[in-house]
Length: 125
Image (cartoon, one colour):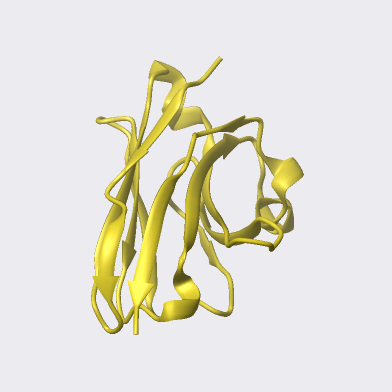
């Protein structure tokens, strides 16, 4: 069982930046692909970004491409989401997830087995 704990959320003005972190409890963290999803009030949870277990491939939703960057530090069992040029529509609870996905499955919730509790990101206009 992998436990994931997100941090770094908060309130930021439009155009600002935040960096989310997700720390994993499991030393086998490096074996998993990692993803970030978000859920806004009244909406479905949606894919944001993912990174393969070695970090060789990254995937992004069209809405965040060129603004968000996912990275990982396997020595620290941590994945990051650097968010820049934030918009009010980025407001959501952000969740990190771990799984064995690769390619197109990494865009899907069922590509992941373990989920964090989420961290709130609020972007004011």
